[in-house]
Length: 42
Picture 1 (spheres, rainbow, N blue to C red):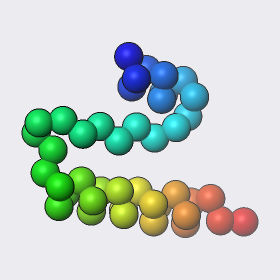
Picture 2 (picture 1 turned 135 degrees about the vertical axis):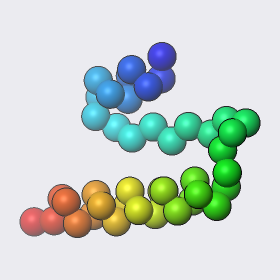
Picture 3 (picture 1 turned 180 degrees about the horizontal axis):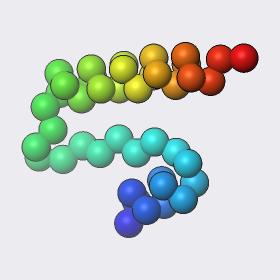
């Protein structure tokens, strides 16, 4: 349900569950931050 809400509102959803590996989760967040900062430059 939260993933549907995130998709409708255009926000990013960071899901943490039992299968989440902390190191790869943090790396993904950093890469997403880099992408959005470069993609939305003016």
